[in-house]
Image (cartoon, rainbow, N blue to C red; front, top):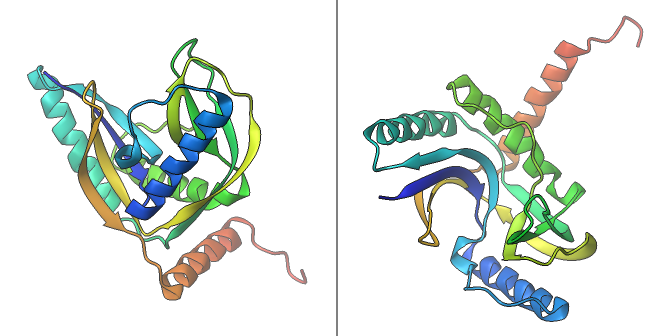
Length: 211
């Protein structure tokens, strides 16, 4: 029996993942937190959770297959430029009393992530999948009972050239990639999306004559 957690995410390249793991080790040492098993291969920024599924139940296996198919159709419809990421804050999420995520987050350096998530969410909703409107972009470094108050920490991220559909196997500390879709890095793609956004804005907010 395995419980599967499905989610879309952005994943750093190998060199960036190693660099971010080094940042994590430095942070843990500075804060006096205990080091956990290496997370280099599992570092990611979650975009959308798609649910948890227990494969010991046939109905949940069928539901997971349906979600994977719908998620794949949504991802196939995406046309979006590459996404730059830059982190500027370290903090703990404190919703849980123990084993709290210690994360990198940020403001303007993650704005394009927020924009992409909204677009992906629209495509997922069009396929009938439920979407959580609440979102704090973050990359989890480790988990610890100690709560770290928000503090500035400038950490370069990476430029995402693809996005992934991942299956986190609960209790196994392992992610299986179920799909990967490219993000266009060309200026033409970026301009096309900007033109579409501008056209939509003009449609929603037409100028009065003489403006």
